[in-house]
Length: 324
Image 1 (cartoon, rainbow, N blue to C red):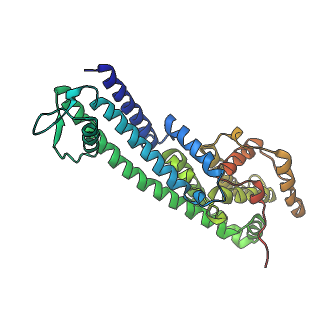
Image 2: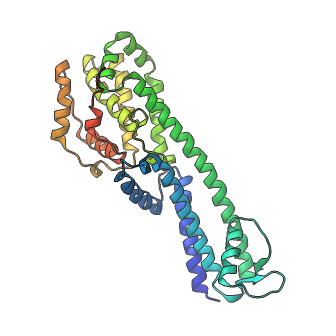
Image 3: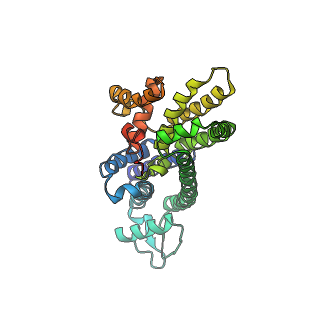
C-alpha cells in the first residue's frame, strides 16, 4: 500500500476543510486559499466592468469557490482510494476496480448516495470511506447553510444602500435633505438604528466575506458608494454644531459607524490608487456652502481602496444627478 499517497490525499482534504471552515464558520474572513482565489477572480471581473459578467460577480465568486472546494475534496479522496489496487473492489465479484470505478466510487462516497455496487476492499479503505462519506455530508450541508446566509447578507446590504439613496441621489440632494431641520431632527432621532444597520453590514465582511463580491453597476444598490456620499455630507454638516451638542454626537456616531465599516473591509488602505490632490479638488465643491473639508488621510485611503475594489471612484461619489 502506498502510504505516502494516502498521506498526500488526506493532506489535501484536511487543508481544504481548514480553508472551508475558516471561511464559512470562523467569522474571521476567508481562509488563505479562498482569499487568493477570490482576489484573482475579483481583479478579472473588475477588468470587465462594462460586460454582463460584472452583474453576476457575486454568483461567480460563490459558485467557483464552492466548485474548487468540492474538486479538491474529490481530488484528495480519489488519490486516497487509488493508493492501492484493492482499495476499491466490485461488491459482487470482488474484482479490483479500475480508475473509472474508483472515480465512480469516490463520487458516491462523497455525495453519501451509497449505491453499493463497488465497496472498500480492505480495512484501511473501509475506515477512510466512513470518514470521507461523513466529510462529504458536512461540506454539502454546511455549504448550503452558508449559501443562504450569504443571500440574506446581500439583501441586507442592498436594503441599507437603497435607504441611503432615498435620502438623496447625490451629495447635493443629501446635503439639501440635512438643511431641512425637520428632516435632520428625524435623522438624528434614528441615528442609533442607522448606526446599528451599518455595523451589522460591516460584520458581514468577516462572517460572510463573499458578500463583498456581489457588485453592481446600479448606483442606488452600491452600498460603498452610498456610504461615501453620506459620509462626505455628514463630515461637513457636523461643523455646524458644537462638539458637546446632541446633534454633533449623533452625527459623529454615524460617522464612526461608517469608519468601522471601512476598517472591517477586505481591502487594505494602501491597496487603492490614492490621489489626495484630485480628492481635494472634488471636495472644493463644499466651499460654495462655506465649508472647508476636514481631511482624514487614513479614512480617505480606506474609502479609495474600497470604492475601487467595488468598481467605483471618487468622481462618482461627487457626480451630480442631471437636473431635468
